[in-house]
Length: 118
Image 1 (tube, rainbow, N blue to C red):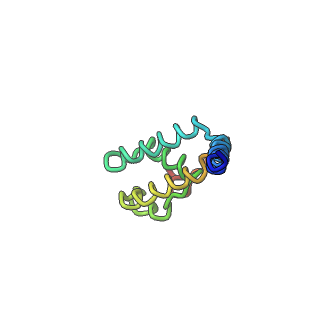
Image 2: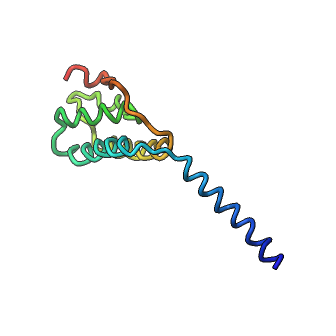
Image 3: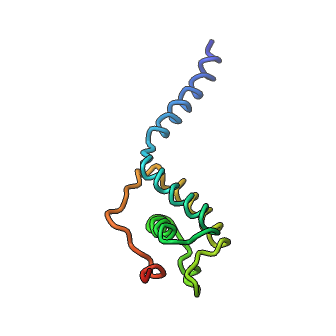
């Protein structure tokens, strides 16, 4: 019986600590929905139309996660697909690192220089 208790006790402690860590995550679901809405919008339209709505999505993402803005500053101010694919990986990593921090929407978004004339 002692052997069972000795084996059971560490398992019980591990399970309790795992539950504690889960409750420490305060993910803002509304932010998550909006963030991935913009990610998906960019993904679905990058090869179709980089219109004003597309730029709004890039601006939204750039206010929270890293965007290779210097590579968008080309002669046509377009977002190259290869650059986007690299950035998308960074965005997902950023979100995973920050999701439990109860990310809040900013009161106003800063428009990157590349899009200030649009």
